[in-house]
Amino acid sequence: MVRKLRSSAQVDPVRRGSVRILKNRVAKRALKTETSVSFAKNVPKFAGESKYGPAETISKPSSTIKIEPDEGISPTSLTGIKDEGPLDFRIKYEPFETNPLQVFPKKDESPANIFAKSTLTEEEHSPSNWTQIYNKVVEMRAKFIAPVDTMGCERIPEQINPLIRHSNPKVFRFQLLISLMLSSQTKDEVNYDAVSRLNHYFLTEAGYIDGLCIEAVNNSSESTIDSLIQKVGFHNRKSQYMKKSCELLRDNFDGDIPKTIKEIVTLPGVGPKMGYLLLYKAWNISDGIGVDVHLHRLATMWNWAPKTDKPETTRLALQEWLPKEYWADINPLLVGFGQMVCLPKGNKCDICSLATTGLCKNVNKKVLKLRGDPKRLIDVQKGRGDLTHLIRDIEDLA
Ligand code: SF4
Image 1 (tube, rainbow, N blue to C red):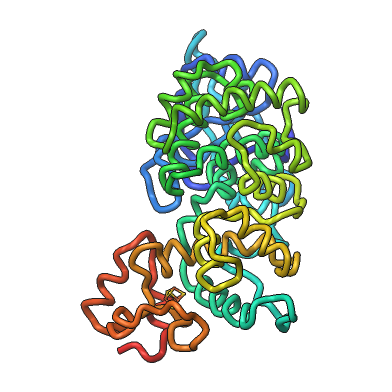
Image 2: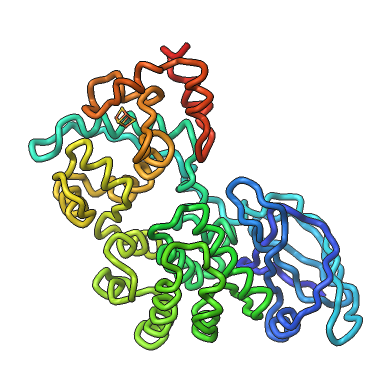
C-alpha cells in the first residue's frame, strides 16, 4: 500500500530511526481516523529545547507502508510490525535522509537574531539619532542569540513542533495565545517549559492528537492546568484565564483566534501588549506594537518615549513616530538586547558598542572603565546566553 506522506505530517528532527513501543489510548484512538499521530519524545534537555523535546510523528501501523514523500523529503520506507495485542504495537521506521525542516523552506525568514537595519534618516517628529541607536543594536544582536530568540513566546509553538504553523495553523495560533498568556512576569525559559509540559501532557496523557489545543483545555479542570504550570508567575490566575478564554474562543470565535485587537483583548488576561504580538504572529496583521518590559525600559531610557511607568504610554508614543515597517521587529530586537547586554540591573556597558559613541546618555562609567578587564570578561559571560562573538568583535577590548 502506497501512501503519500501528508504535508501536514510532523517529523522528529532530532532522533530518527528508532523502534518505538506505544501502549496507550492516544495511539489507538487517533489512528482510527488518522494516518499519523504525534507524540512528544522524552529526550534530554539542551539549549532551546524543553525536556519534553520536539514532537515526532509515527504513522499508522500496517503490514508494510511505503512512504512516498512529497515536498522534497527523500524516499524512505516505513515498516509496521503487526499489532500484537489490543494495547501494544510496535512501529519501526527508517531514518529520513533529509532535514525535515526543508519541507517548508522559510525563504522569507532570517534567523531570529538577524534584523534589518534602518536606512531612514530621522524626521522632525522622531527622536534624534534613533536610527543610529537602532542600527547599533541590530549589529550587536546579530552576534548573540538571546533567550527570546529560542524560547520567547512567539517562538514556542514552532520550537515544540517545527511544522505546526503550516500543518495546523489553528492549533499554532492557539498555542501562541497560551504562550503569550503565560509569559507575563515569567522568564522565557520557565514559560517555554510550562507550555512544553502542557503540550506533552495533552498529547501523551490526555490523548489529544493536537496536544495543547482548545478542546484539551476546555475538557480539563482548572486544577489540572494549574498543576502543569506551577512554575509560571501567577499560575492560579493564569489557569483561570486560560479556561475562560478557551470557552470564549469556542463560543464566540469558532475556536480560533480573532482577527482584530478589539476582539482579542476581550479574552481575560490578554492586554494590548500580548494582543498586538498575537495579531502579528498569528495573522500577520501589524496594527500596533507589542511593548514588553525591556522595550518599555529601553525606549524611555533613550528618550524615545516619555518617562513613565506605563508600557501602554510607550506603545502609543512609539507608534507616533516609528515607521510601521519596524513595528514587528522592535520588540524582539530590544527584548534580546535587554536580556543579554543592557540588563535592568547590571547593564554591561563595557561590551556595548553604544557606550563609546555618545549615543546613549545612560552609560555606567564605572562599568565602562572595566572594558577589556580579563576578570570582568569572565563575569560578563555569566548570563543567559553566549556573548563570545559580541566580545570578540569589540575591537578595543584587550
Ligand atoms: S546603558 Fe550601557 S549597556 Fe545600556 S545601551 Fe547604554 S551603553 Fe549600552
